[in-house]
Image (cartoon, rainbow, N blue to C red):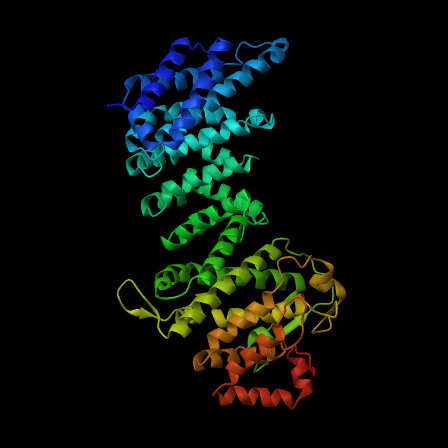
Length: 549
């Protein structure tokens, strides 16, 4: 038995539907006003939604309305001459009004009502077509479609929210749409932040807690392009004011990517973002920022599985980018390496040309920015391993100490410690420290040879500090690593970093801490430091700057 209120709402709908004619201005205005009034009542009362959804006339009328709107709107301009445009602008406004009212009515009718969602889902193709039309570049540039696009998106979201069967159908459809039909990406580019927010709520509702749908989001095609759009949006919204819609949108995007981390999808997504002939892409860097933030905010037993999944890709990426940086800096400085007549490691014997570098790599700042993020991630995981006193369980059930895992990794014949030492040595020449606002060069190079006159420092901040910090963590109470640092000539490199550098806050403190860890319970390393301390000239020949700081 229907309540009197519901009966009245159904009667209003049927009366307006009988008088409705999409070619009649009066009929459209009356129907739109009726839909708005009913929608307001539906938003307040779930019982009304359930009862009105039991009348088949409602669904037939709604189906015809959406089809009518999609057909009329998509064919509107086919036979329009230039002189008719002004006359038709009023007609367009009327159609947008009706579309907004239909979307608001549908949105409220299906909210938290699974049965109504099932009935209304057949209108999804027409809603999608209308969203595609309203998100076209020419229409969006008119600046008059924000409200209709926003309400259409909210209606689409309510169609599937909390209904797993419909979400499954919806996500399968949308993850297989062609590029030109992928309306979720188009919606994320909207200038209306409320539309962006509604779109992100829809994406979150579709993916939250579902590994299969998160995997679809990471595969090449529509899913990865949607991730790229969200990363671009995060960069744009990173400075949004707290409590604003922009900040809320950023938080939802962060939550989506946090789920991708927790469901072990980052390695595949990082791979999808790669590009031929680019060491690292902007979207890989943004993804690393999210991973770094996530790792620093999560601690405890539950994080070990995430650490275990991330460690291989983080270690490989670090070693790869470190190798790239070493090659790039060496080319810029025109280093020539010789192994003749020296008891020191090959990498220490450097012949430096005084001529201007032939090339400077414009991608190097971006690579170094990614290196900073990777280094911070490795530090976080290594410290967590030490602090908990245990490793993470591998797939075969045995425990894995992830700090030991990092120390075993190699790339192009270098292990991670050798890579750190060589990169720090090169950076000390290429990137002079800043002291009291002026560069201090560790070795006598012509000014053209330093980064300061050829590169902006963006991307290089904190690099030496974080690299030496990672070295200190990896060698902590590990004699094999301590000995490795000594064998590759790393002790003088670390000593040379015990200085103030405004580009690397607390570099001196981290270098001193690393030196402490290198010397702890290691007599051989202590002897090297004693020898350097008693021989100023020897210190200078190793590229150091003997300082009383």
